[in-house]
Amino acid sequence: MASEDITKLAESLAKTKVGGGQLSFKGQSLKLNTAEDAEEVIKQIEEFDGLEALRLEGNTVGVEAAKVIAKALEKKSELKRCHWSDMFTGRLRSEIPPALISLGDALITAGAQLVELDLSDNAFGPDGVRGFEVLLKSPACYTLQELKLNNCGMGIGGGKILAAALKECHRKSSAQGKPLALKIFVAGRNRLENDGATALAEAFGIIGTLEEVHMPQNGINHPGITALAQAFAINPLLKVINLNDNTFTEKGAVAMAETLKALRQIEVINFGDCLVRSKGAVAIADAVKEGLHKLKELNLSFCEIKRDAALTVAEAIEDKTELEKLDLNGNCLGEEGCEQLHEILEGFNMASVLGSLSDDEGEEDDEDEEDEDEEEEEEQPQLKERGVEEQESLTPKKIIDSQASTPVPSPPVDVATFLAFPSPEKLLRLGPKCSVLIAQQTDTSDVEKVVATLLRISSVFKDEAPVKTAVHETTDALMKKAFSSATFNSDAFITNLLIQMGLLKSEEKIKAVPSLYGILMTLNHMVQQDYFPKSLAPVLSAFVTKLNLFLNETSYCDINKVSDFFFLRTKLGA
Image (cartoon, rainbow, N blue to C red; front, side, top):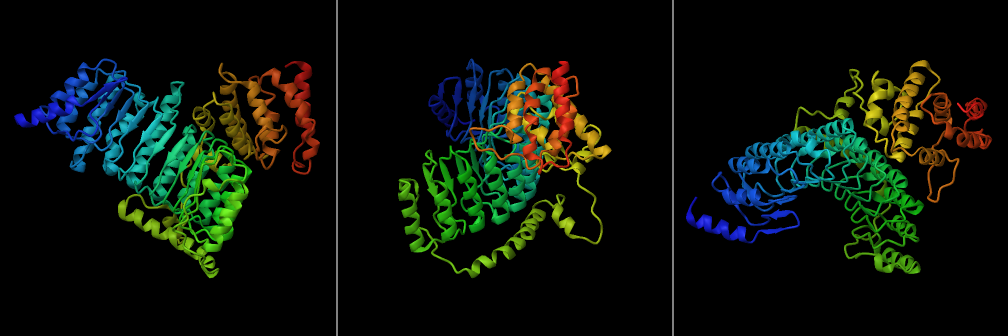
């Protein structure tokens, strides 16, 4: 290493910011190729007591340098945050996986418990995901709350590898009694497309603790958007959804709108440049109008929304007192429509929240609306072709399905798929271990999650032996685990369940389950089991006696039988 290089490195290190447990080499343009190049960096790491955050952004780290830095990290058990974005500038893609493996192994050896891992802007492709796959599955990531992988070129293949790793991390951490509780997920500009997004949606459905999801510019079409929407519905803490510059069309927008109705914590919705079109915008407006009282930002810019639909969106925000920004720029309102939009918002005293309309496309002919359905049908095959070009081995399912000349076997089912799309067939296809799998993958410390899972299980109830048995066994495994937990609040559980059944009013607007048949028959079974707390029987009994109000809906359910069980249990104190 030349003396002038050493001098330059020393000067850079002199600017290193140290404090609050953080050691930063951010933006110093260090070229660390060899062990000798990394000597000063290693020294700083080794001498830093209580290292909690390491910033390596804006440098370039080679394989050999990564190995010696990793060696220094093996003794840093307190490390929690790895800010490692943009740290392989100018490197061959083949260099990145071994470098990441070395660093990941060091964190595992150290016994670190990460809270944040940021590998954004590293362009490592699908192979790069393999580089930190083991780390993600290890105890070092059981505590992970923020995972940032923006602009990494993961593609469909990398998305699937990542999803599998996250599911495995959740499974292993759940077995330890502390399930992975990921809060922030960032993976914009990764060419995930439908298959990658759908794989990640399965992982999101299992995790269930997400608060922010950022997946802009991924070429996701309505099947992938629909899968994400169904996964988001199982993440009740979601505050931010950023899917900018994907392709919803009406189908995806309607699916996402249904999910938004179930989410109470949403603050930011960014569906800009997502082609939600007018029908999709109206569906989203309905969701906004029904709830979302914490909404701060709504972005539906450049979505081919016409005047009437845009005005419907404006009318929907009338009581959104927290709203700070409404972006409807780049749509098709026309001059008159823009004026009407301003008038509506001024009437609510909310004109200040409206963003610029400088890129409005003007009013379009009604004939354009008629072509939208045909365009939606054409978009899916085009997207699938791109996926084949990227990774021929990952043949999209819908292309296979289109070859109707031969029957296609049913795809495998996992817990996330069943919970997102419950059906008797899917429950049976989970196999004999379905009860154990669902119980293992449900965080029973979260009352709302337990109720949601119970309702999904019971919704597939049929008075047919195989289905009935599967529902009962799965319910028993889930509720036995919940009621036996010292942290499970039984009173909160029964209150939340009654609200979801529509038998108890809530301060917030709740969409009750469409049919009570499945849950009533499941409760009928539950109250007879030893794990069911005696204290809950009188509460349930009191509400079940009122079910005559619902006879039209549940006429095929023997309500008297269910009620008798509750009363019998109360009377006997059993």
